[in-house]
Structures are given as C-alpha cells and as structure tokens.
Length: 79
Image (cartoon, rainbow, N blue to C red; front, side, top):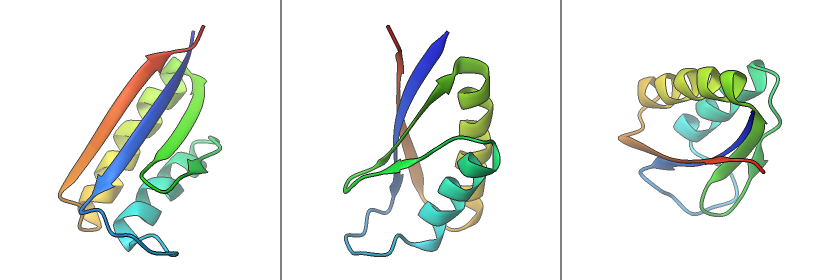
C-alpha cells in the first residue's frame, strides 16, 4: 500500500531558505530514500506505507531536535 504524507514544520517562517529544523526533517526523509516535494506551506512524500511511516518518525525527531515546536502531518492512502 502506498501513502502520501504532507507535513509542515513549525514555527512556520516564509522565505527562500527553509530553517534548520525543516532542513533536518527533509534530510531524514531523503536518507530513507524518499523524494521530498518542497512547497510553500509544507512538504510532501509518497511511497510504500512502511517506508514513509518509519521515515516520518525519523523526520519528526530530527525536526524537534533541531528546534521545531510542532510537526503537523496529513496522511492519505494512495488509490
């Protein structure tokens, strides 16, 4: 089963370069072999559910350790 996860790392800051805590989350996802779509308000990853869920746990931990105060995740099953 494939899933799509959209996530936003807070505090949200507009700008061209993402803050360190957002970069930490992205790097954790990329280390798991996932391609991350970076958007204006959040990031998106898709893939096999087990891989995405495990990578999201790592990304959340990395973001919080780097200074994030909140990580909001929306998870959808892909058709």
